[in-house]
Length: 314
Figure 1 (cartoon, rainbow, N blue to C red):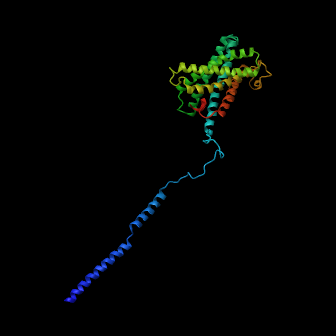
Figure 2: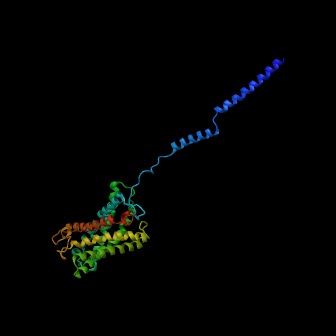
Figure 3: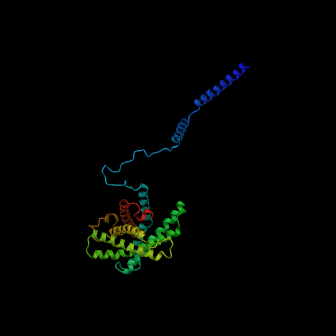
């Protein structure tokens, strides 16, 4: 009896000791809090590494300036596409307006002198040639864009807008075309050199075109919704266009072979002689204005920063 009681007591103690050892064994196998946190941190770190996007900021950046340079910004170079757009628009304007303007002026001068009997030094002659200049611009502009819309199928070409644009430019061309003959007569009568007449005509007719353009904006911006009223911004672009138009009128002086022919550096290219047929003379006149415009506008395209010219799409 005593033995059995002692055996049960020993068995009980043995079971208790076994349970304690088992608990210690499990606790030694189970990870500690620190190891769990460490494992979690590693796994999170791995996930963060794999989820990070590719970064390129470590690539070497080009150096625009040498050491100790005082410049703060890299130079902003004009894109080749922007330059190409400038020359593309210049070519379109030359074909659609500048050549027809010279041709129209010369054609109307023939009509005024040979059919209407106006002397070249009269107001009627000047007004007739100015009208011919304007008709050439208006007709050339509208015909060009109508043909472009029809051939290319460009539905973005709005003929109402183009007609109003043609009217605006024709109004300015009337002013410069009207001013050309009287201005050249005054300059030649002053016994100036050919170069001085050339420059004076450039400045004078360019100014006449600018004033006509600003006046036309003031008058036509009301009834014509596609014509902007005069603003500071379009004043700047109107000036750049007027400079190029002045170049066209300056080159047109080269068609006069009677005034100081030895000084006329354009005579071999665009000179209209007394024996030149009328139609050929009209084509030469359009060529002269085209050469002048392309020369002037091409120079502006090359030297002016982006956004400063009329053909920058402003």
